[in-house]
Image (cartoon, rainbow, N blue to C red; front, top):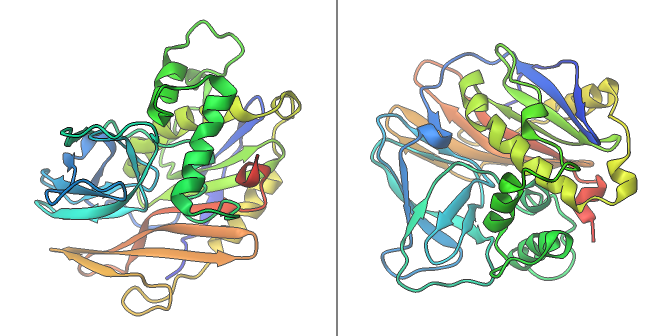
Length: 320
C-alpha cells in the first residue's frame, strides 16, 4: 500500500511558519465522520481510571476517526490520543492515551469533552517516535515537552497543555503573536498541508478526503502557532521556506511503502467495523517517520484515511 500521488501548491508564510497546500490523487468520499462532527463519547475506564487508557464510544451514524494528538479534555486529567483510531457505528473501545496535564488527578471525574483540538507539534512529535527519544519513557518525554510551555509562557497550576491553548486563544492584546485568522483558507479539493518552520520542512499531514482535512485544519493551525512561542528570537525572524523544499519533502513521504493491507510487515492490526475495515500504519526511512491509518471499503482498494510524515532532523524535534 502506497501514499497516493501528492501535489504541492504555493505556500503562505506567517513569520517563520510556512504552509503549503497539498492535493492527492486518491478517490473521493469514505463516509467517515471526524473532528467536532463525530459524535464520540469519552470516559475513564469502568474498571478503574488509568493514565494510559480511555474508553471511547461512537454514538454517530457513520464510522468515526480520532487522530493522534487529538486532545481529550476533562476526566481525571487531560489526555491525548496516542495514535489514529477508527470506530464503527455504536462501537466502544479502550484506546491508548498519554497525559498532557501532569499536575492533576481528580478522583470521581469520569467524562471528557471533545472539541477536536490538537496538541502542538512540539508534543505530537513524541507520539510517532519522531522526537529525540533520549532517556526516560515516552510519557515522561511528553510531560517534559508540555513543561516547555510552562517555562516559556508562565506556569499553569497543573502543567496543563489545554490551559496554555486556552490562554493563547484568549490573549487578544498580544500584538507580537500571529493570528490564526491570517492563515490561508483551505482551497478547493485540498487534502493536506506541508508545514515548514524556519527554512526546513517539519511535517506533511494528509487526509483521505477534502472533508476530513477541513474538519481538522483550523485546529492544526491554532496548535502550530502555539509552537512558535517556544522559538528564540532569531528563529522567529527567519524567512519562509522555499517551495522546492516542500515539494522535495512531499516526494520523500510519497515514496514510502506500507505493505499489504491484510498482511504487510508494517501491519499492526486490522479491525472490522462492519462494511469498513481499518489498519494503523507506520514506517521510517532515513530522516522521515510516518504514521497514520488506512481503511478498506467493499469493492475498493484500501487507502490512507490519514497520514502524518515528520522530518526527524528538524530542530523542533530535539529542542531543549
